[in-house]
Length: 405
Image 1 (tube, one colour):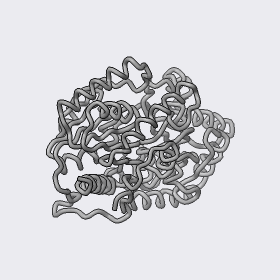
Image 2: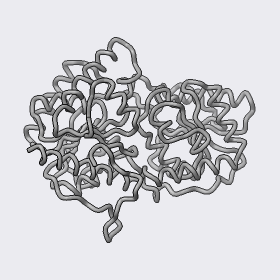
Image 3: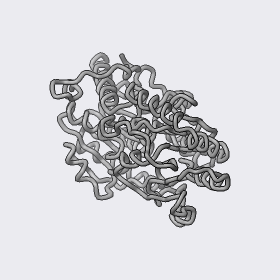
Image 4: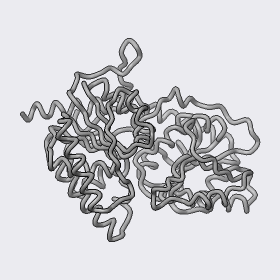
C-alpha cells in the first residue's frame, strides 16, 4: 500500500529465479551525480527499471565508466555536475541543461538520486514538468548538520524545491531510514502516503557470503568508505593512536578513495604519514570489497553525521563480520548496540578505541554479532528486497496518477 513497502517478506521470483517484473512504464530518466556512484550503489535500481520500462536513460557525470552503465541496458547522457560547487551561475547553467534534456527526452518518470540532482533536477521540472518525479534521498549530509550561513541558505533552497516537487500528486519520495523522513517532514516536505522506505541500495547476499573467522592471531578492523571527515576517518586514526599507546593487538586498515573533490577530504599526505605499514595501513581504493571481508574481522564506520543506509555496512554485515558504528541516523537504524554490533558516540576517539579493544579481545562476541548482522541483512536489506520496494513504489505512484486522472 502507498507509503509502506513490506520489505520484510521475501519477494516472489520467476521461474529463472529473478524478481518478478511489473507492467511496463514508458521512459524513465535517472539523474545521478557520478557514473561510479551510480554503478556502486544503484545497479539494483537500474536492473529493475530496465525490466519495467521501455527506455531507461541515465544522466550523470562521467569518470570513464559510462560504458558500464550502457551494458546494464541503459542509454546515457553525460552532464558535468560539480558536487562541491555552490556557484549560482554554474548551477543555473546545469538547471537549464537538465531542462533541455527533459524537453528532448520527455520521460514519463524523472528519477532524481541524491541531493545535487534532486535540487537541480527539481528546479528543472519547474521549466518542464514531467508527469512523475521520484525524489530519491540517499542521506541528508550538510542539509541536516551544517550551520554555516552558506549551508543554511542551501538548506532553505533545497527544502523549498523539495516541498514544491512533493506537492505534485505524481511525485514519490524514497528514503533509506525513518529519521531522514522525519527530518524532511519537519522541514515542510510533506509526502503524505507517497513514500517508500528502502533498505539502502541493497546488496547481493551471495556475493557477500558469510565468512569464517580469519585464521590470524591479530584481528583486523577495516574502514571502507571515502577518506572524508564526515565519515569519521580522522576519529578512527586518533583511536588507532590510542590503541597503539595501549599496546592492543589489532590492525587498522583504511580502504577507500581520498575524494580530492570534496572539501572535507583528508589529505593523501596525512593518510600516508599516519600509516606505518604494520598495525596501521592505508590500503587505497578497491573494487573487490568482498575480498576485504575474507581477511578482516571487524567493520568500523565512525560517522560524525547522518548516513542514509551505508552500503559498506551492509556488505560487512552480510559477510557476518562484527560492526562498530556511531549513534547517528542510518547507522543506528541497522545496528542495535550489543545485538548486530557496537554503537559509540560520534566524534569520541576514546570510546571508539574501547569498542575496538572489546571486539579485538573477544572472538566469540565477534562471531555472535556477525551472525546477527547477517540475519538482519537477509530480513530486508538485499538487492531483491530493494528491487521489490522500488517496484511497489512505481506501481503505487502510477496507480495514483490513474486514480487522479
